[in-house]
Image (cartoon, rainbow, N blue to C red; front, side):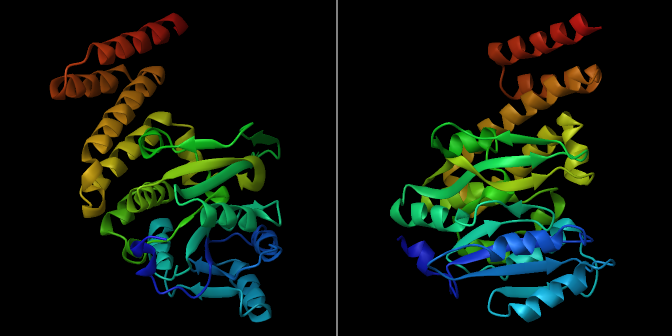
Length: 312
């Protein structure tokens, strides 16, 4: 293992990163699914409760009293918001590896952690491993997303598209997680930049195992709203890449991050055209062409316009 891993003061093999707020109908299932994990190593569930005002807090306290060696529970004294809770709870992540499972998601496979940690222990080429996922829609319908074979993902590919669904992820810990930059408060989700920083920290790849180990609920929260507005998703992705370019850790791949930023802005303008927001799309197109003229960019832009007008 590289020296960067040894800088951490670890007290268990896996820290399970669990954020919750007003999830009384789900949190017990989430905790039961994590506590059912069969491992030959230690793990601890690090819960950040953002001052829930339903029964979530009492459920978490009850579980923490029953499993004091497995659960590290903290309820904030005031509501910090999603990313405030994210940053604050991240300071307590001191396992060798980090797994993610939010308070409305749950794990399906009792060997999930064992399989992923075993792979990371044997393969230093990977810093992050995800799996297939069961997606539960708001109406109760279930879909499944799974690869047929193990899929390797380079950092360049992950910059263009986050293929790792959060409750499936396990990745190598690194010291910077315990002191995240302030800009994390200004983004809507933190898993993707954590993944990119982990891959850069260890000069490694990500991979996805060809099996389903976790369930991910699509609820009516902010992330759900953004998925209905794809142009906003790509705009936020571009902002995140802009922020990452300011980090010392990421300086060696500034060009990759800038290329990824251009790609996200291209997807944003195409999405804006598809949403019939042609003026906003045109302004982004002008900005991109001013920064770096590209025939490929022009081709994509004209195609998105043609597609929009053909649907009119």
